[in-house]
Structures are given as structure tokens and as C-alpha cells.
Image (cartoon, rainbow, N blue to C red):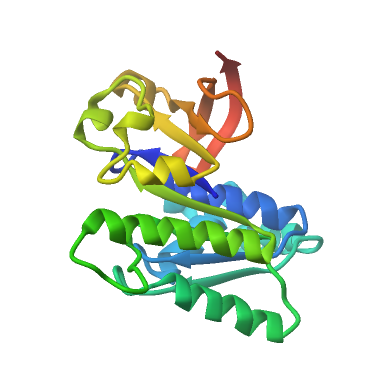
Length: 234
């Protein structure tokens, strides 16, 4: 279970879409569940990312976009998109969705949920932290049972959104997310970095390797490219 962590509008969904695209291009089967935006918006974002064309130019360059996507898909895996209303999707529903595809002979290598914070627990309680914990425990269990990579995102708290670097203590609402996840990567950028199309990815927590590493990256968010290139490692 891997998580991208950041404040509002820092590119968490863009990152999830790009990692899903990368796995798909490598021949992996990917299930993408969107709980925040519509399938239409997600499809446009993926089209822009695959074709490396700005979102604002998709309609004007539709033939070029279609040709680039067709070329990319020739050796790719399967990429399935599903949309559910915010706060209605549970891990039990995810298990049933995966089982439905398995019955059709499709096994997923990666599942992306955008994003876990706005899922619903299988059995809601009066304790928001317990509800949150159950969601993340269930997602990690599905990843283990199905032998797949599970990728999602989570919010930072207000202090984390204002910090130069968001650490594990800046996770919003429930620290259990940090304990349960195998890797947590925070997205950080100052106003100046954002203007330059730059960001820093801080490995806030890691179960099997040393954390604390920072990747400096160049982005092209107009084309939904979360990592255009790595410009440095600290």
C-alpha cells in the first residue's frame, strides 16, 4: 500500500493517474477507481498524460491525441476506469469489483483509488479514526490477498499544507494511515517552485527501506505529467 500525501490542489490525483499510466504502458493490468472526479474528467487527464498534450489543446489536437494513444496502447495492458460517488465506495465493493473481473479472466497488477480518505468503511462507527483505520487496513489486506500494488492518496493537515516539507506527523485525521501504509510520499512545493513547474517528493515513511529521501522533480501539470524528470536527490 503506497500513498501520495499532500495538501489540496498539489497534484495528488495527477500523480495517481501518471503512475497508473506508467504501469499500463509496461503491460500491467490496472484498475482505477475515482471517487472525486468523473470518468470523463479522468479520461481527459489520462489522454493528456499519455499523448503529452496540454488539457486545453485536447479538442483541437484530437486526431494527434488519438494516434498517440493508439500507438501507446499497442503493447500496453488493460486500464479499467470506474466512478463512484464520494463517501459511498467501500473495500467490500472493491473486492467484488476485482472478483467480477477475475471471473472474466482479468487479474489486476495495480489498483488505484482516488482517494482512500473519501471511501466509506464497511461498518461505520461513531469514531472517525476507527472508520479511517478500517479503510486503510482493508485496502492493504486486499493488496496482500490479490498480490497487487495498491496506490492511493491522503491529505495533510493544515500545518502540513503550510510546511516546507510535509512529514509523517502532518497526515490529516488519523496517524494509523502512516502505520498501515508501506510507503508514504509527500508532495511539496513553494509558490516559487510551483511557478517554475517544480516540486519535491519526500519519502515520509517507508516500511522496508530508509525514509527521509527527497526527489526534486520537474512537472508539466498542464499535460498531466506529474514527473517529467528527476532533477536531484537529497
